[in-house]
Length: 108
Figure (cartoon, helix red, strand yellow):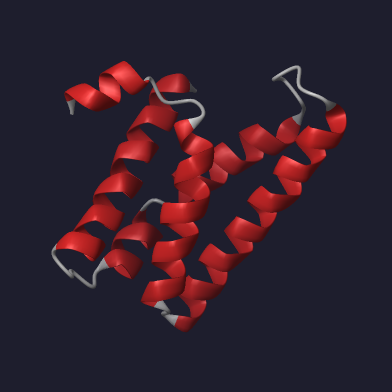
């Protein structure tokens, strides 16, 4: 799963970067293409507390992740580029960053 998370992280980071820096407004189309990977990550995260953290903290993180996913789905349905950007950049990427090798990220 580590490699899949790394790839998904890079894809979403690229989408948000292009949206923010170059004002490319294709984030909806590009995000729709990788929804299966997003879903796989979310299901993996929600499956069980494999991280060994406090159960209350894990439940809070899980609920927040579901809210982020709902925001992404709403943004895609309503074609709301700003909500989509925010849900990815300030939501989902933060979760993925927990599992990304920061040394490898610095190299890319």
